[in-house]
Structure formats: C-alpha cells, structure tokens
Length: 416
Image 1: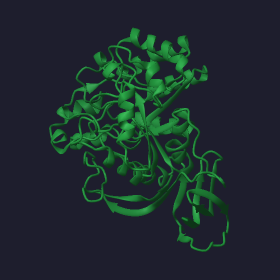
Image 2: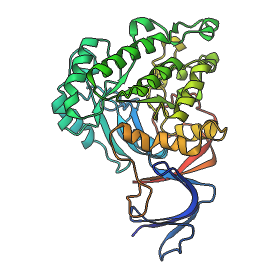
Image 3: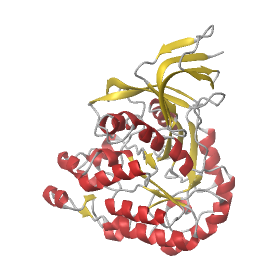
Image 4: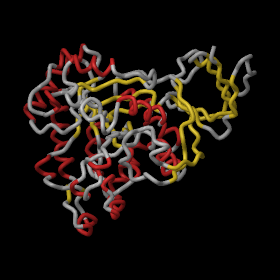
C-alpha cells in the first residue's frame, strides 16, 4: 500500500477556484482526505510541503514527437520522461511524425510503443493525408481508433478542402484544432514584421498572415457551426477577432504557446536560432495582449508545442533554422517565475490554463481535486533553483534558449 501525506501544501483547485493551505492524504493513487490537519496513518510517507504547490496534473494540448521517423531528435520514452519531469500527466501529440498519424494503424503503433505508465499519452489524428493539407484523411476510421481529435499541426491553405473537412467532421464529435497562417502573406518571414525586424535585418512576417487566415476561418465556423480550437494565437489583433467571435457565441476555444507569453521580438537581438518559432514571437504589444487574453479567458489554454531538433539542425544562422523549441520541463517554472511572481497572472489562472481548461478544449473532464477522486496531481516547488543542462534535462533535445542558465522552480512529483 502506498500512502502519502502532504502537510501544509498550497492546494490549487481551478475547477472550484480554490487556493488554500491544507493537508492532503493520497492512498494507492486516490485522494482520501483534504483537511487543515490530518493524523498520519501507519506506514504513511509524510512530506513537509510548506511553500510547495499542489494542483491537478498539467495537460499539454499539442507537442511533437520525434519517434517514429526522427528518433535522433527525441524518442517516445525521452518525451514521456520530459513530460513527467515537467508536471504533465496528459500529453497530446501532433500527427507530425514520419509516417504521419493519418490512419488507425499508426494510432495503434504509437500506443504500443509507449512504455511509461505516466503521463497518459493521447494523439491528434491528421485532418489530411500525411498532414500535408492536400487530401482529406479517413476521418471516420481515425475517429474510431481512439484519437483525441483532428489536427494537422500546420496551416491548411486549401480553403475548399478545409470547408469540406469541417462539414464532414462535424458528425464525428471530435475536437478540431487549426493553426492560422496565410503562407503567401508570410512569404519568407522569419520574425514578426516591424521596427525590430528592420533593425535586425531579418525578413519580417506580417501579423496579417495570421489574422487574415483567422478571419476567414471564423467566417467558416460561423457558417458551418463545427466547433474549432484555434492553435498558436500570437497577435494582438487575433485576440480582438477571437473576443468578437466569442461575443457572437461562435463555438471556438483558443490557445497560445508558453514562449509567446514570456518573450517578444526584442529577445531576438542575440539571433539565437532556438528562438526561431512558428508563429514567430510577437511584438511587446502582442505579448501584453496575449497575457491579458489569458487573464480574461479569451485564450483558455497555454500549450507547450514542444518541438525537438538536434544540435546540428539548430546550430545554423537564425533565418535558416527550423522553427521550434523544447519546453515540457521548462514551461511551468518559467511561467511561474516570470508571470506569477511578477503578478501578471495569478497562480490559479496559470494552473487553470495549464490543466483544467486544456482538458475542456479536448472535450475531456478535468482532473478533480476532491476526496475519493483519482489522484492526478502535480507537486511543484516554486523556489527550487536548478541549472538547465544536458545532465538535468530528460529530453534528448537541447534546443532551448535557456540552456546553460539557472532557473527557479521545479516539479517534485506527479501522481496519475
């Protein structure tokens, strides 16, 4: 029998809007008591959790796996270890593997190759064959295979295909996640267009590359009625469009990535290829609008979009680097350090957008923090300093701008 007694832990409950210091008793993976003072049962492992934070396990909406096809970047085992180390009890993978997850056999392959019991792995099925945006995948077959929903992970440029896909998928009852970008408007841009891109001499990607595609997608949603999750929101104007659409009661949810909340174009002065992202980092005004949108609930979820690359792939000039960075082990401590400690987000808001609201975006019930519920929990020390290095990271990849830096905050344990 496994018995854990957490004494005087700060318990965050986003579902009930609770934030209090209490004792929590966990027995064989179940929450058995929550009270100001709990007598320690025999054989209990008692932890003094003063200053620690306990909340529902974190849920990532979308991240990339290297395996199959790119095992030199990241294996499934390393990916799951990184997720557990970062406090995630549910991890949702995009179908951007090789081959892509566009058929039931690939879904089964992924399930059979996950060895770790936690976190729970779930995957998006590709909306189009090969996630290439040219031909609709066998959506009904995929829906029956146990996927969480449909997403290519890349912007679909064929609007006729996208319209048919939304119409066809409506009856399947699965979430659909779409990224918005007009690739022709983006051109060869590698950072957000503006005064910083001009000063740095890098090709700029205009904000309208995102907002024009988003406006068109919202028109489709309003006409067709299929619920859609909007991925990778990165501009202030996108926030305005989403708020207006929600005021009209369109069936949409939205997420931004953790790095777009932490950084903006001014961070690119070092030309660090690990900051080459898609969509690119926004301006300071974009960053401020995204933080406010998270506070207001216009953006429900913060996604990690963990995207591993090898050292050789990323050690190139900024404009030539592939877009993406790792983040499963870094997101919670850095978001807490820079947004909660500074007062830009409350602890409860941050935890909600990393746990219960991502679950709702996936049409799944959030983990319950109550007596006689399964213990799907994350214990976090917001004061623990550690060095981000090859020795401390569980991920095989090292493509992060925080490599070699000391950060504050680390996950102590997860349940579930």
